[in-house]
Image 1 (cartoon, one colour):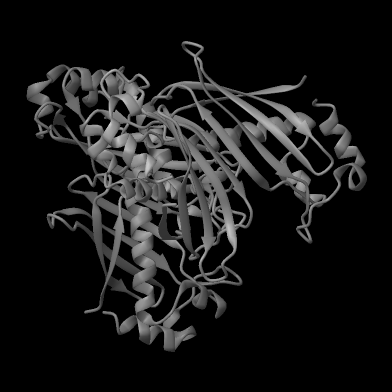
Image 2 (cartoon, one colour):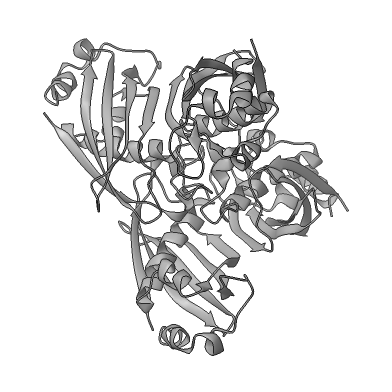
Length: 138
Length: 138
Length: 138
Length: 138
């Protein structure tokens, strides 16, 4: 099974007065991780948009296990959790590098959308070659 | 059933290059709504902390239905979805005021924690009066 | 001299681990204040764009005097500091409402730009009626 | 003259509806650059705090020349612009790596403060060894 790995370092601006990363920033981290994951099918978002496919988020979720702190180096592993012709669900796990602690786990759901009319498309029928690339990540 | 209502206006800085509010900001909106909801039990977070209770987030989730735009006036309704002696789940619904469209729905889960030792507590046993206030919101 | 007043409340997500508002957020506050100021000439940004004028930021500056804290209610007074046919400088002063302390002072410089070709324009010549509205704010 | 170099990549969440990086985020970039610069005296902020020195920001400023876009790789060069026993001014220049265009230039002013009483200190007298390290960066 394909997994992508993304590394980042907690910025001061991302902390809140509890002294840990504000919970909303994990979604920003997941977004960076998602970009790296999509690169795994040999494409960038910009490439997909240029052929007419957009992948808007329809759901995000995160469980918080341990608070990340300023300066922490974090590694995020991303994998495909569910795939259908109309949507894809990715799973993320954020781990602190220096002690291996799992900080957070989450998922996101994206639909496949026609970038002209902004309607949901059946990726398998409309873009069979892209569909196969996604299938290969399972 | 108790519901709190929070109003806010989308800031320019909250948009992204898709021209809509970046998905991570809904969690910032929910946080403002949560503060108003907690005020419904006649307390503020600061008050709870001063008597020894903290309520760290352990899960957040959001479904995105329609993108909010710069300048949109948004109303968020918050209600209690689940309550146990160790945790509370709140539900949020964000609606655009000018056309009544539902923009997003989400929930958050918070545990009750001893602010000294940072261990989960049984609110019903440890703070029966606060517990009753939460129960009254169901 | 025309001054606009903007009120806002510090959000939890805007604090950092020092327990005060992260310095970058004052620029987000000034942006909200700027929108209210522009309304003083009877227009919104969207209106200006629709007739072909954009006002990109070319400089921002802020002096920090006292740290704002979570929940603080802040009032921002905005006034016109300098005006020329090609640019406008606004000045901002952020004051905490409960004790009247000045928290920060800053300014921003914006140029007048043709929204089609994205070139600087001479507002006085190109849009004399809009120019007069800005002059009336001095 | 000592210069530090910091590299980063524009995140999607950092863009706004103009399709470029929101101006407030340059201050977040400068903060990451500042951390790297301070490392040039062989210390981290945490080390300085542990011996009793804090360096709160009292002013930030930025001129915007060209808008950075999503995915752009940016290099920030940081150098010491002014130094006195009570404060230090750093200068930042952000350049887009793929075309060498200067995106923004800015500075920040920090005072030296006693971390116990939060009063301004004369670094040269109070911590002559740390003062020498700063002087060596000129």
